[in-house]
Length: 139
Image 1 (tube, rainbow, N blue to C red):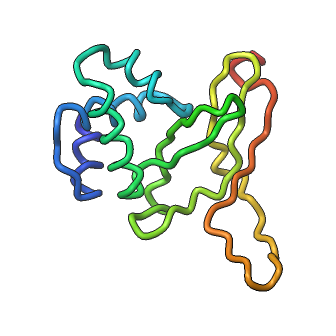
Image 2 (spheres, helix red, strand yellow):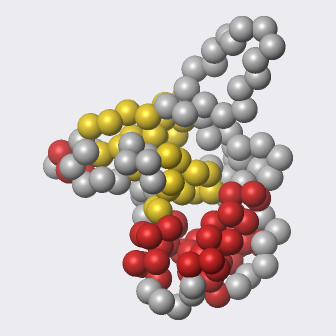
């Protein structure tokens, strides 16, 4: 829980039990988590609304980013601390959806290339995902 407390402090978030537990779940996993995943991991300690509010406060502060996976579910993953802030998310990396285990992974090392949009268009976020079998399922 020490790292979770440090991150909450670093991002200017109050240290509540729910925030600590949710953040600890993200720190312990190497894949994106949905609201349902968090409910399963945490149990019935907190109601649905409290978990949603926690997720959205984390996203607002630049601690996590949302991902629409291939099933249409919204999942969340930790942002790299050196690229995201409350002012701007820099999560322009590829997301990998595993067709075997159903997990979604951030491939931070694979950047989405910049693109020239027609005049008058401004991109705020880019979404790019790959689908296949993850490293864990291939082993």
